[in-house]
Length: 336
View 1 (tube, rainbow, N blue to C red):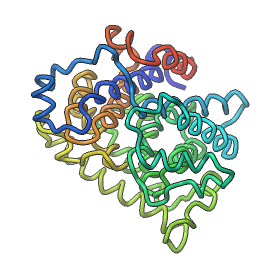
View 2: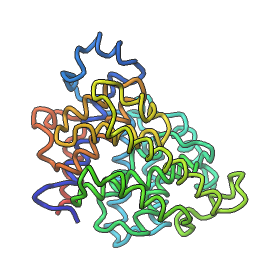
View 3: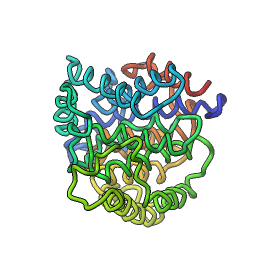
């Protein structure tokens, strides 16, 4: 459980939404265009309407599914899959689902409306960042053991079945957990690398079922290792970048544009690690990138909020973020 004084859960959810809203206007533009339209990156202002995108919408869907399971006592595989399926289909049908949602999420959620097993809806070859942009609530569970790791991978797998999407989601939630519970920024990458190595040979069959059989891999172990190996490679790039990157340069230059899961994790983390004590600067750096700016900034905000808590975010921003009341209610639930 996170500290009620720090309010890391509230900080995480609010930071994710703020980063998402800040990056909404800059996504699909390069840095020179962003600065020409909005001014110097260090001065980027939250839009007056502070609307979020599908990143926060789907984070809220995961959070609601998680809360529903906790109300029944446990977060168990079948119940969590059922609750996620319901929330994802509700999102798919919502008239508010007009915030540039990803193709993989739309395809998979359309298939989740049928009676087929969720594993048949999963897009097994997709490792888009939609797998891990929404996973932060799993890092706010009281403990991060096999159940939380399996649940983090499951929420990814309903839409993005590629093993790198699963591993990156697990690592994203793990990073939130570590930061919320006091791991320092300097130690974070090493902790994540060690976690990835420890889990490289672990397929969570209780949570994923026979998902791996939809791939071309000869067995579940080969399947899951592919994901962890790609994540370990990007963590190596991140470790170098956090020590050598020019803060004035586009972070995507160092760790990728963030359209795929492992790069979204690494570039979101890089933006946070460049400015660990300056949460708004981290958000602005993440939003002023050539890549998937809203997802990168959402992840950077989740990491900064987990590290610094609710007080990281000024009231002038949080008071006007879309879905403010629900974000605060969910944060209070996990901070209590």
